[in-house]
Image 1 (cartoon, rainbow, N blue to C red):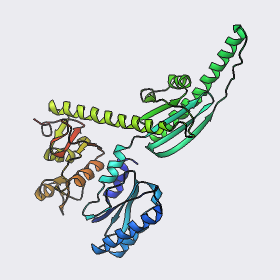
Image 2 (cartoon, helix red, strand yellow):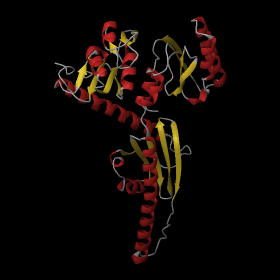
Image 3 (cartoon, rainbow, N blue to C red):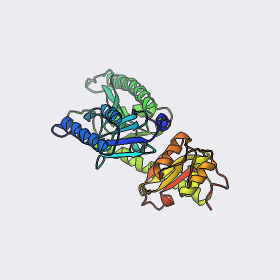
Image 4 (cartoon, helix red, strand yellow):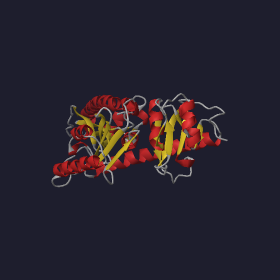
Length: 373
């Protein structure tokens, strides 16, 4: 899923009911527990005055307990229609339900923007198992490459026969590597991989790496381990997760460094709620930065069009809105960012380079009205 895929949710009629229910698959009676959690949620919706057709629609969209760590369901109250039902890879501390003028997309947006699609290549001289993951543990595709193996016979005294066999074997390994490489690049293209992680025979991985095309040649990483996944290489999944986590941390630090540089030069960055609001009105935001310390209780005004946002109702009316409403600051900003094609990055508020006021933006272009002083 991409952020732009959420656009139909933004065009639905509000108010909305947003339900987030956690799921556990590695516990006894996981399915029964999941059903009980949803029944409790439906009772809570009834206590909040949510109409029965809406409750029934939400319950019908709950999915299976094994679909993910949680399920996010959003329903339009006027239409009694579910506008979104998606698994989420992070289980919440508590199940939540909100009823408001805007849907609460933050759990899903957080999930989507922190995913690191990657390909893992388990290779040896006989072939490879090539796996494509949308995120840690979420296998999207798996292909087994069965190459040919040339077995070397020990020739007494070496000589020309030994060199001939050695040359033949190396040629075959290179042919195997070519098929492995093409499979890995095809899967990487399919899922938009940020990493291709090689594990297994060092020489075969060298052959695989040699012919990688751009941009995959710069996204290649190798980790220790073998091809076998029968329990003898239990550390491989941990090493893959560590590699992905390091990539995520590095990307975040790089983005924050870019933001700090642009902000320091008063160019393609803005800082704080008023400046970000103004930039979103102009569809000027390239990447919206939201810190983990952003005020979840703060409110903003918004209109029918996602770009109609402001600090006051009068501001939004001045932009052409006929019925200004208030909504949670983060939800209003997310709605405007998704509608204008901006990316989103969640960043730790503890970083010295994090934006003030919990929000900031890297801009597509700069002008005097949105550049900070």
